[in-house]
Image: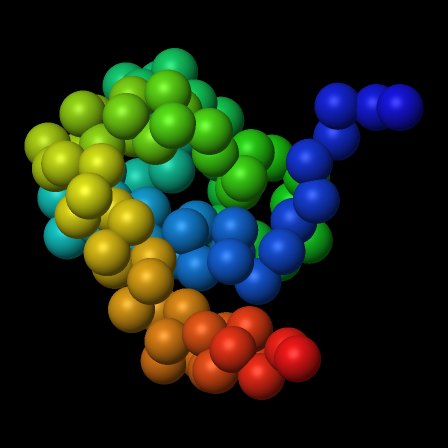
Length: 92
C-alpha cells in the first residue's frame, strides 16, 4: 500500500480553517508553509497535505499563534455549516 492520504470533506474543512486563520493573521500560504514547516494547500485539487496529523496541526497552530483546539473547533464549525456532520450522523 501507499502512504497517500485520502482528501475528505473533513480534511478540506480543516484546510479552510487553516486558510481562514492565516488570512486573519495576514500570513499567506507560502509564508505559512515556511514558518510551520508544513506544506498545505486548501484548493480541492491539491495533493498537498490537507490531511494533517496532530504534529502538523500543532506546527501550523504555533505558526498562526493559536491553539490546536482553536483550529479543530473552526474546522468543526465549517464542517457543520457545510452539512458534513448531519450526513455523518445519518449513517445507520
